[in-house]
Length: 215
Image 1 (tube, helix red, strand yellow):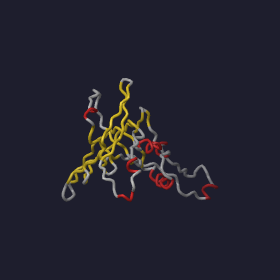
Image 2 (cartoon, helix red, strand yellow):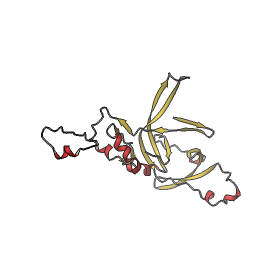
Image 3 (tube, one colour):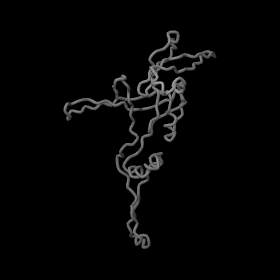
Image 4 (cartoon, rainbow, N blue to C red):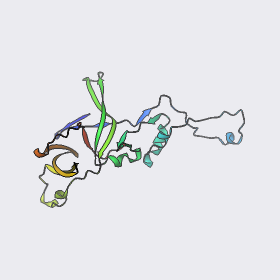
């Protein structure tokens, strides 16, 4: 759940998309014999298949994974990720695009496992995603100073960069700059200007900047 390296601590979230069915569904026969097709009688044994639920059967996957989906859809069913934008459900095929460069609110539960049979015995924790709400999309970063710098002049000695936030209050627009600390592609707020530290009275919410995630 927590990843620790030289740059600090980061939290990793997980979500199981497929769940094993309580009872496997009956697959259709792989082979149909010509004699059975041409000599159908009332006494012939009729082989039927169970109907796969629409959610699992039409789950969006890449072409190279379609065969694998066809293989497991009789033993497993999908558990769609609960992703919402403006209180509207985001369909599975649109989730990756919707989460990319977005600020989100994540509701999660902590799953604890004690591994006593291993030496030494230890505990593991996993943050399971229960729901994601998209707060802001297309959070672009100003990388002008990076893109215009001469690449042959050496690495840029910059640990922070600015991200501009636009907030509207009482029909007045104001901007505030926050210094964002770059931690291996993970952005987190490290410092805010003193004049911007105002209490809004609203309930505080934990937010994170989502990256491109494969669902």
